[in-house]
Image (cartoon, rainbow, N blue to C red; front, side, top):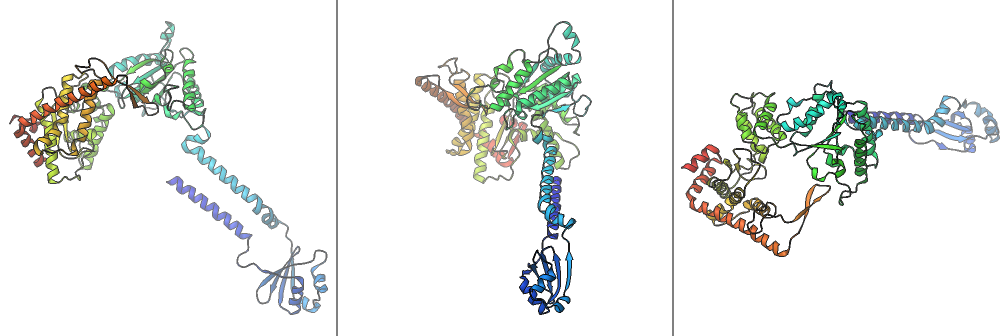
Length: 607
C-alpha cells in the first residue's frame, strides 16, 4: 500500500511540473485577433493604438481600450517605413510607443527547442527508468533476471532458520537413512578413501504434511552446510528455456558453495513422465526436466552437492529420474504412530502455556491418521480458541475441541434446525452410534452430536483405540452396517427417509465396490481386481476406469456389491428393531443436550 501511494505521488508531481512548464509557454484566455497592416495604419491614424512590440516579423498591438491584436510586418523594410507607405500620419505615429524584442537567448531555445522536443523525450526517459527500477526491486528482480535461480538459501550461520533432527519428532527410520548423507557432508574424505560414492539424490516420499521439508532442512542443520530450497513450480516460466537456464544457474551456484544441499519441493511439478499424453507435452517443463537429468548425471564424483527432493506422487515421476546415479535412494515417510504423535505434540506445545491437566498421550490416542501438519494445526487452533476466550493458558477442552474442528470443520451454531428436523437428525445419528456400539469389530464411539460442523448437519465420531495398518473383511462389512445405521433409523422410526443419508449412501456404495473390485473380498469372484484406472496427468487424479472384464463379470460385480450392501442393511435393521427402546433413549438425550460424550454414551448403552 505504501509503495502504491509513493508511485501515485511521484506521477502526480511529474504531471503538475509538466503542466506548469507548458502553461508558461501557452497563452491563456482568448487568442488576440490578427489584423493587416492596412487596418493597423487606420487604427494609428484614429489614435486607437497605445503601444506596438516588434518580435522579428510579428507585431503585438496594444490598443487604448486595453485589448490586443497581432499583425505581421513586411520583411524587406522597417516598421516605420512600412507604416508610412500605408499612409500613417507621422505626427500620430510619434504618439505610439514602439519597442523591439529579440527572440534569441534562453527563451528562444526553451520555447522552440527544449519544450516541444527535448522535454517529452526527457519525460519518456524518466518514465522508462522508473519502470525498470520498480521491476528490478519487485519480485527480486525477476523482470530482468529470468535465468537466475529463485532458490532461497539458508546458510549455516543463520541459527533462526536452521533446524536439526531434534526438531523433527518420529521418523526414526528416515533419520537413519539420512544420517549417511549428513556423515558424508561432514567428512567426505573417509568415503573417498575407501572408494565409496555417496548417493547424488535422495527422494523423500510421503503423504502431505508428514514432514518432508522439515526433515530436509534438518539434514542441512545437522551437517552445517548451505541449504538451497526451491519448489518445482518455480523452475517453469512462460518462456521456453527459462526453466533449464535456472536449473543451470542453481547447480552452478551450489557447486561454488559445496558441500551443500539442494532441496526441490514438489518434484512432480516438473518431474512427471514425459510423453504421457494429456498434459505431458509442455516443452518448457520437459526442457527443465531434461536439464535436471543432465546436471545430476554430470556431477563430478564426490562434488559435495546432494539433491534432496520431496513428492507425494512417486508413481507419476519419470523413470529417468529414479534410475541409479540420479535419485538413488527413496526414503519413505509414514504418518506418525501414537508415540510419534505424542512427541510431535510436545514439540508444538513447548512454547505455549498449557494447564497442568493437559494429557498429550490422550490427545495422541484421539488423533489416529493425523499428520505432523495436522497436529501443529490442532495445537494452534486450540491456542486461538483460548485467546478468543481471554484465557491465559490452553486447556484440555480447547485441544479436544480442536480435534473435531480439524476433522470436521468449525461449529455452525447458526444452522438452526426445526423441531421435526432436529428429531430426524437425532435419530439418524443415534442409529449410527447404536449400530457401531452393537457390533464387535467397529471403532469405539467417542462422541455423538447434532450440532452442525463443516458440511455435516450432525456427526458420530468414532476413533480406534490403537493405530491400524491392516483391515479385515469383517471390519469392512460391519462398517457398511454402521454407515447404513442412520438411513434405517429414519426408516424404522418415521417410516420415511430424507436426503440426510445421501453422503452415507455414497460412502457405502464406494466401500462395497472397493471390497469387490480392489480388495478381492468377494467369495464368488475370488482374489482378483477389476478395472484399470488411468490418471489425469496434469491433475494427478483418476479420470477413467478401463473395463478389463466381460459384461457377464460386470453383472457378477454388481450382484456382489448388491449382496454386500443388502446383508449390511439387514444387520443394521435387525439391531435397530431389536434395540428400539435404546435407540429412543439415545435420540431423546441428543434432542435434549445436542451432544453426548463417550462416557455418557457408554452409560446409556449399559442401561
